[in-house]
Image (cartoon, rainbow over all chains, first blue to last red; front, side, top):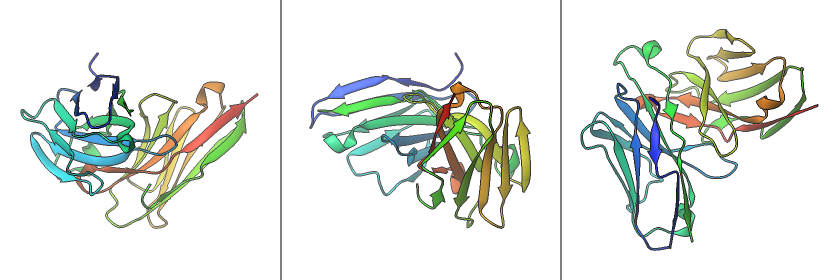
Length: 119
Length: 109
């Protein structure tokens, strides 16, 4: 399977615990995105990387959230001191970005997501 | 979704045609995407428009008018499996996609 993969698929945690999710993008893709989706809503942008550089973080992302992509391949998203409001589907997506040629850039391919439930 | 508007729900009959509209903020626009999402699954790519006009892809077509900040997704010969949420997404800076809340399409017999 050469698509975007996320692990785990499901996570149930107690309030106050820390959780970490992993995303493995499509191998040749240089851009990696994290989104959060709640029921009945579209995905909300959290952050994105180009290679190992984190280029943008949403203002929605509190200090409890941190993301890394240390070698420009897989990425991790950590949530510290989880709250019930963090319960959502966390989606990772990747794309190939070619500078200066918007038409040639690929669409974003999504992973299956990690469903987080904070109890 | 911020600055993306699409209807919340639509219902259509199997075999019919349905058009799902989307309006978006035009500043910093860099492409318009449509994704399909079945319940509990990841969004899957359907279509992409960056220039004005109609893009046809089998039973699905997508239209874009950049000056009007308007797009639509047209689904022909509807099948029961087309029941899903259809997400309109605008690409802006950084290739970042901003999604609408999605249109829940229900296909009935």
